[in-house]
Length: 192
Image (cartoon, rainbow, N blue to C red; front, side, top):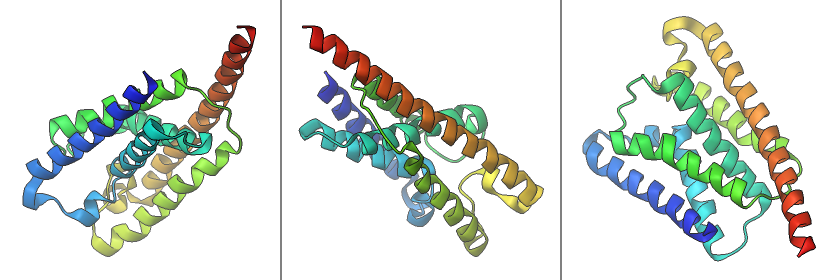
């Protein structure tokens, strides 16, 4: 069942990306497209899921993929749901709603003990720096809460702080839940 779930994650992300590329056509700007956290987190999760179909994947990689997808879903629901980011409906649903849910379900069904959950925060921090350095150079920002042109850098700082707190809380929660559920599962299996 877990392998089917992981294959479903991979195929869902792949189909959403193909759909997005076809529907957007010439309007798709590859450099900007690959500058969305949503796209990067979905690609990462899809690769981790596909690898997990064939071989065990480290708990650290699975935990990171779970974190990035959970944050993708939550930030979409809280900050981006009503904002038009020119994403076709199916791709939007698949990458912001369905895939994040499936990746979290995979973590809960096949929990693992993790250590050093804070290392998962390096990628989002690097992404923030990248977005804020690249934005003024190309005059484009991937998300409204990262765009200082309308409300200034104070607004960007507040938005980034909210997202950072979300990352930290979820990273700890994913690590804690994985460890506790894995211990419980281990005790249950050892009784048999």
